Amino acid sequence: MNTTLTSTLRVYDEKDGAKALVDTTDRAEIARILGAEKISFERWEASAPLTAESGQDEILAAYAGDIRRLKDDFGYTTADVIRVTKETPNVPALRQKFLNEHTHSEDEVRFFVEGSASFYLRTGGKVYQAICTRGDLIGVPANTTHWFDMGPAPEFAAIRLFVNPDGWVANFTGDDIASRFPKYE
Image (cartoon, rainbow, N blue to C red; front, side):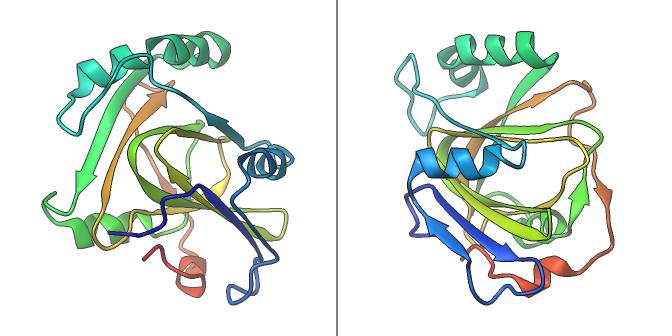
C-alpha cells in the first residue's frame, strides 16, 4: 500500500516527468493551483462515523448534504461508491486501464472516503499529479486529459458523481504520456 497519507500536488512540465516544478501538501495551495485550471479541490468531513466495513448506503448517507449540494449546483443525477482493495479481482489489469490517458464528456468527480490514489491532469502544458486522500474531493472538468493511478496494492473507497446515469465512460487519447511520469507506488 502507498505510504503517502497526506494530500499532495506535484506539477511537472508535460515534457519532463523527472522533476516537479511544484511539490506541496498545503491543501489551500493545492486548491488555489488546481482552481486556476478550473479543477475543483475541496475538503469534506463526514456527518456520521464510518468504518472500512461501511457499505454504499451508509457512505452516501454520511455525505448526503455535500452530495445534494453538488447535484443541485452541477446537475449530477447519480452517485455511487467504488471500493478497490488489493483483494479486488484483476487489480493489475484494472490499474493499467486507468493508467491510459483519457477524457470524459462530463466532469469526473471523486470524493475519497478512505485510502488514497492519484489523478494526473494534463492541461496548459503541464501535468498536475494530485494525490487524493481520505476527505479530499476532486472535480476534473469534462474533456480534460488525465489518467488515474490507484497504485499496485490499492486501498481506497470513493464517492462518484455523474450526470450520465451510465457512469464512467472514457475516450482514450492513445498517447503514452503516462509512461513518462512517476507512478503512484
